[in-house]
Image (cartoon, rainbow, N blue to C red; front, side, top):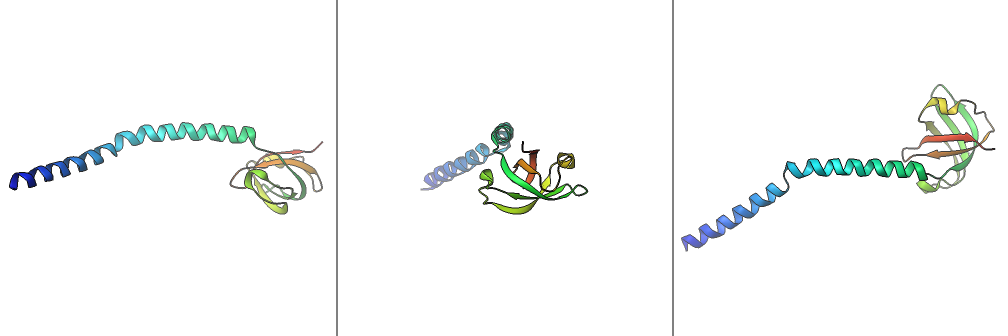
Length: 120
């Protein structure tokens, strides 16, 4: 009976140590590196395929880098048409824009304008 308990305890200890070892730090580093490369690829694909949305400039605040746009549906965010304020990733993106201009623009998941241009 005593030897059976020792065998069971040994098997249990071995299974726990194997689980801990398998989930150890060595696998995490390579996994995170792979995830980072994968995420970079996804970001590149997103920006390359980001759909442009039509809008009209209602107000520009060059000091804060914000612009109010009356826009159509923003498909990549599943957002219906409305008027709202967006932040430009870079204030320089808003240079040359004026109230009333028709524009094409793209925004990221954080509601930052990644690209904006006057519509021809």
